[in-house]
Length: 299
Ligand code: NAD
Image (cartoon, rainbow, N blue to C red; front, side, top):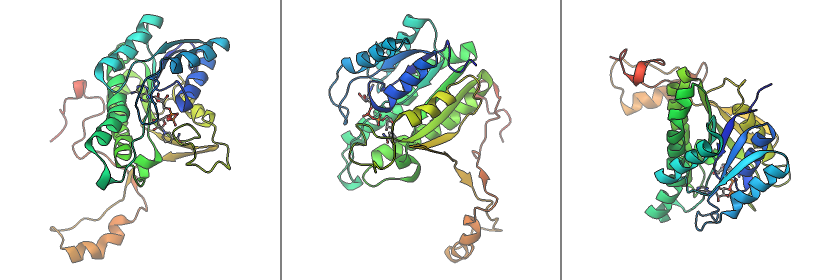
């Protein structure tokens, strides 16, 4: 079974925690891995190249193939450099696992613009920029597996994490569009929403259940496998519990004219009824296989 055997993968933020676990999993499956990690603190400060180097040493000791990379993926030059690392070391690129992350928690009324931007830059901009640098190579070879890392905070909200939640739902929006644009090139784009015990969550989680990052890496490894044809899926992994998250739209209600507040309130139960709900679609939908995304079939 090919799985990820012989593929070349980038895992960002792979110097510890979930990223390290993803990198070990992919390498054990036969992928050559670029272990990217800036070696930042939990809030994104500082840098330490040994974070990536140590994981590479672990992979090599287990008989795997990996190279370290300590570029900052939050900015265009660093994101491009990570992709260049893959091309220089292994001559190709097949898999991108966007995992690097930081936290700068604050309630919204206390959140500074700097806290907002720093978190957005790593999670949303970094995911977009690394994937953007990889995209031409994936398209040209007509094959790619991309994973983005969302979060329950992004999908459902979390107190004190407006910056993080916005970025983590942002990567889902990115995923949904890249899944459409990558479809004809055999590029599959999916998300994981993990709950795992790492530096990021130390002291915050109920440690009564096994929250080893390896549970999440199982989903990542599968989503990166050649046999896995899923795209635009969100796989939530909470320790041993795996589930699927969807954004769905209710069947809804038609009004003959713009309704009043009272009319809306009176019909809200019908509008909100999720019986028969289905996946939504953009109001102005680009045909799935439109060349260059041209809106040829749109009104
Ligand atoms: P972690 O703090 O253990 O590891 C994150 C790694 O990302 C660190 O090694 C850090 O140096 C690296 N990093 C940070 N900024 C970087 C940058 N600009 N460039 C390159 N590397 C950078 O955290 P973790 O728990 O392993 O989190 C991994 C991902 O999973 C994050 O995106 C996080 O938001 C997400 N996540 C984790 C949980 C959880 O329960 N642990 C839950 C939801 C989402």
